[in-house]
Image (tube, one colour):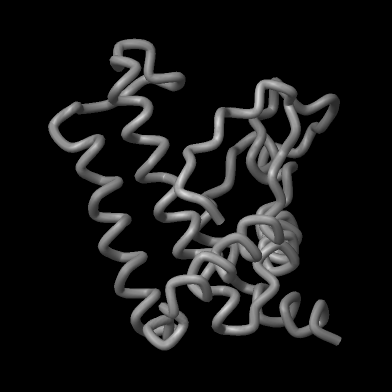
Length: 156
């Protein structure tokens, strides 16, 4: 791994979590840093990077999607901080033996079961229903009743 900064891929090609994981494994190996990469140390580094990411938004108030009022240098700095968080998260999952991609997909599936669409859309978005209870949007905090049962069923 060289010290060159790669140019952004304008071809629309994506980078997989596995690509990032392998690059970070190689990066640490080349520098003999693996001995420092315990789950605890990586978690603490991740928390520090989340703090640095937070500083990008500090004192800005509510920020609109797309960051239209941000300077290009601010967006670039934000991208670097987001990348630091992602890379530490990928390393942490690696050293914990967790397939982050599979774990994330599983979590999306669990969230879809825990928070079904029909409980969160308003009546005017539903095609047909005459029940008054369905006209209300339910509170997402009240949907924890079957979460443990669902999780156990998915594991089996």
